[in-house]
Length: 271
Image (cartoon, rainbow, N blue to C red):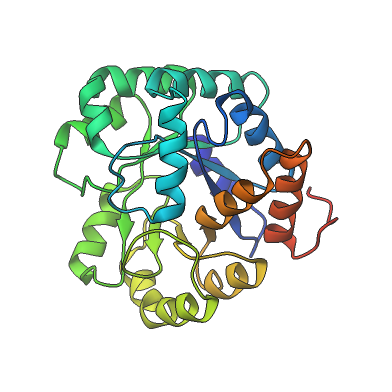
């Protein structure tokens, strides 16, 4: 059983899992590992570590910006594997690599999954690879005990949702709105989720469901994840980091922001 699967199995009744996305190497490579530890201490249950790419087709301006900065500072896949190895010296938090297929193919499918496993990676999210598109990916995930996480969206058919549920392990990523990543008005996201989350629950029965795209506050997270197992925050977190960096206390301030996301209170102690 993977770290992701154990997390969902052991969570307290009705508690929501909070997964946080950051771009590896943003805002500077030297602090990515320290930032991950701060996010965990502040309430993160899962870290989605973005693999920066020059043409992030599913991402809006916020993550595009973070990817460009990371690439300009020399981040590549081996750098990311080394970051995960360093995190693993102190932490067992589930880590998922999220990014696009082009860098993975350039690196080589088998070397990528082998080194990901050796580093301590628990899962992968590759938005531009739907289930069945690269059968070798599913085979390599099985071989190296890495959970493949696939996405469903409001325009996903019932039959497609069932297929995605069968192909996924760990959880299914429920995209709350059609379009690219980015913080949105909470009402927009909440209304969109309400229109199709019951359909997701009917068709996704094997895996937990986390909802993402557009969450920017604790209130958003509570409303949007009410009928699912948790939520994912990315653009709002990176926007906060962009505003806080490079002040001396930007990492601790980011931790404060994450505690507010998790609990709604700045100084709430995280168990």
